[in-house]
Amino acid sequence: MGLELGLDDVDKGILKMLQVDARISYAEMAKRLNLPESTIRYRVKRLVATKVIRKVIALVDPRKIGFDVGRGYGEGGPKLSLRST
Image (cartoon, rainbow, N blue to C red; front, top):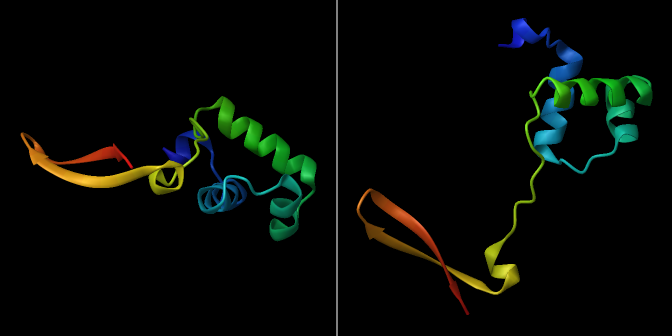
């Protein structure tokens, strides 16, 4: 897939940084990759347009929003359930 889309080391570097912290700024990525910020903006826009980046999501800690995390076992194996505290 990487070859089909023409992903190079810059694209891969951007993706690695975004996987660690999706809130990293274009300026910080540009600094780390030693490239102009405009290049980073263009590359991210292209990664989104080609669906390499499908979605940016918030990973929420259920405990921080008032849920207790419990495990239940039933058909199909373990399931994660959220119980309000």
